[in-house]
Image 1 (tube, rainbow, N blue to C red):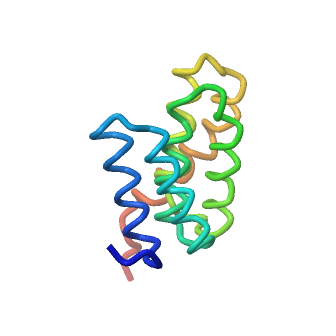
Image 2: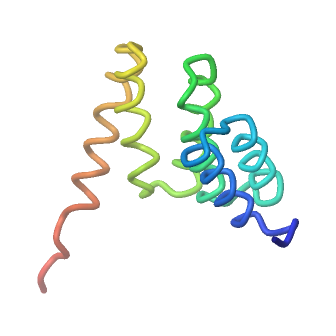
Amino acid sequence: MDPRNAEAHASLGTALGFYEWDYPAGLRETSRAVELAPSSTRALFDHGYLLLQFPRFADSALAVFRKIQRLDPLHAASAALPFHRLGNLHRFADAEAARFPALALVALVALPPAKN
């Protein structure tokens, strides 16, 4: 693996975290991906998704997802995932705050193209 390739680190981190159940190693790899490419929505999403697995990192994960939304306002997964996971973490006020922007974005992305 090329040690300078952010996408490779992001993929390895996801595999380690979600398939090998080695979350610390997965977080190290996705952190490295974000260091290498701080504006990569792929690296940020993978890192935020791993962070969301731990209630103590939920605020850090939300900050990552907000950064993704600033970089790519139409990144639907980064809007919808925190809403879903926050409910699972019993952070209902945060989930409610994330609900309407997520639903609006999903509706916008799902709209068929305008006919001329």
